[in-house]
Structure formats: structure tokens, C-alpha cells
Length: 87
Image (cartoon, rainbow, N blue to C red; front, side, top):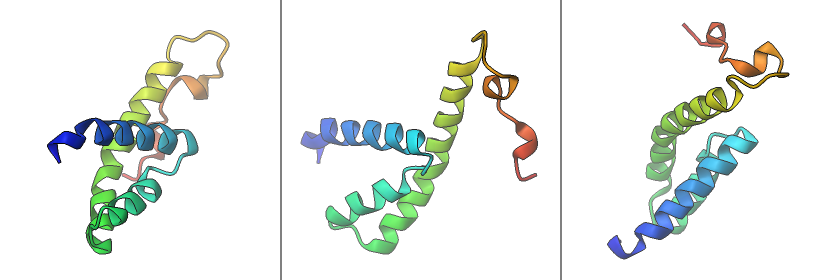
């Protein structure tokens, strides 16, 4: 497993990039990979659910930083609307 660190790093970058680009959170990409690596389905789903929160946080921060200070963007594109949070 240690010899495969570069593959896991590349897969994490792939899942994070395309999950953020498509707005799917990454679980639909993570679960099939884990099942193919002989992880039981319910463990793969649980792991994907746990990974979803850090992916969402990283995506939110990335979009926030990418849109801040850019002239010509609408106000909604330059900030994160915290009124949409569930609390």
C-alpha cells in the first residue's frame, strides 16, 4: 500500500477536482473505486460519506478564494451565502 501513495494522491486530486466541477461531492466517484479495491460496499459508502465533508469544505474555500477580489463578477459569485446553511 505504501508503494501506491502516488496513485492514491492522483486519485484524490481527480475525485476532488471533478467532484467540485460537477457538484457531486465525490462520493459517486469514491464508492466504485473502493469497491473495486475489495472494500465492502457498506464500508465504502461510509468512507465516502466521511470524505464528503472535507471535500465540500475544500471546494467552498476554493470557490471563495477564486471569486474574491475579481472585478466584474456579480456579488453572488464573490462570496459564500451563509444564509443557505441549515442552522
